[in-house]
View 1 (cartoon, rainbow, N blue to C red):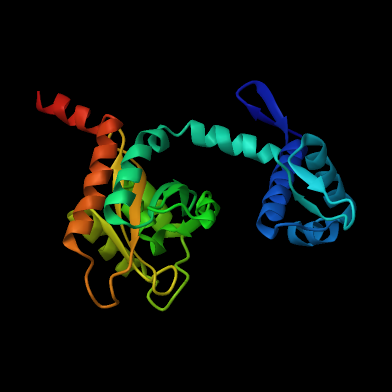
View 2: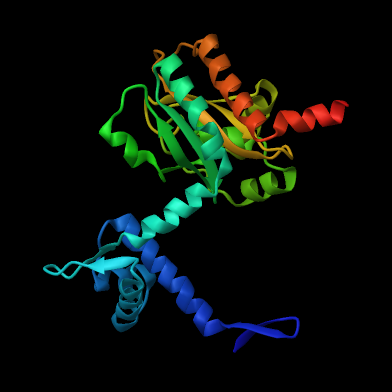
Length: 269
């Protein structure tokens, strides 16, 4: 049976299910690193022949490849084309690049740029004062928004209906013994973030990892990204105020390149 919108037949439901399963198989292989037909079938609760068809389709499309010796499936390079196009169409990444570099150089600390992706904060850029091979691995990594400074800086500035929807559906699972796990505590934290203009993470996602983040706003006032630095202040001590000002100032300067300051000037004139 087809899905009907108005008077037009759009996509048969069977094809929609196949597409969803194909995408689920792609995500499973990506997260697993490599997988067999049996593993994909078990993960997606599918018969083995159905899983084999999905993987073969993905191989033919160039998104997955099969190892000749072991017969297991891994991601193929065509996925990089999609990732490159997604990053290219994020103006905040291009506008922020030079300012992120400046922040990394002046603070001597790793700098991250992230956007919301579902219930996660996804890293779309990372700059370090001294080039490090492992820096490349951070692109595309995700942190739960309730347990990271990058995420809380964005979550605090969601429109109220979107924030309520998130709070009503999220499972606040403990990542460390410092993770916020109650809705009341999360609301208090987000209110504090809005008041002071930046977010902190005190080992909430990974033990002993501390960071400071500030939101980046677009022309229409939407928080489209956040910038953060990971700092190494001893536990129990507040981060340096000068460092906080540097992070907030960088976020404000990036916002200005996206037209946020221009809109404010228009409203004042």
